[in-house]
Length: 238
View 1 (spheres, one colour):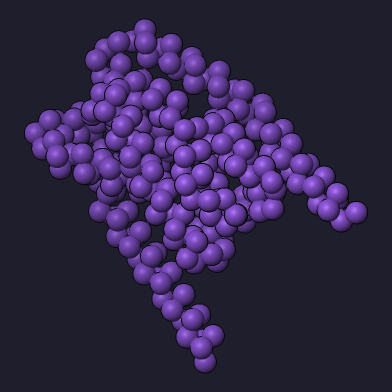
View 2 (cartoon, one colour):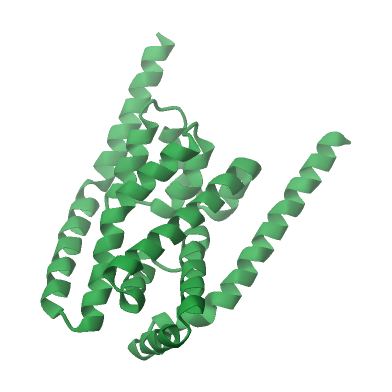
């Protein structure tokens, strides 16, 4: 009976979590819809200028939602942050929202465990990241995977809490690794907004080169860590 009660509580909690995420998504969807067009972004900018504090709160909620639900690419929100708040403050708000979103995901996963992750993340992504479960280099792997563009960061955010990594280490490493790309995206958005096309082009080139490198070496990096895990397991078995 006690086991059935625990299972019922777990399922009920998951349903409540899903309902809250759906409600937040519906509430924020008009903002997401505006992001898609230049006219919409301009409307958002006017709104933030007229309702600054409310604009900050809305943007933080959008950034948190991007991490928790991953319904839109993170770079889109970051560029929007630069457009609305400038390069510096846009980056600050993006990082605050990202940290809040990561903390929400981390502790929710620690409470509900793998069933929640399997309900949200593609099973193929989970299998790809399974090398993190018992590798001694988990912290290094987390840092490198958040640092390299095109890595499966959304899946990693949900999978990392299933490992033995400490919350403080995860937050510190992920935020430090994310920061350069968040700053670049926000400065890009600010440059576009202010008409500094040269800076925008230079930043686009940096992102493009980094993206190409990420695409070329993504599988090799993951393969390197998978081999390290396999080698560690083989040594332990001997």
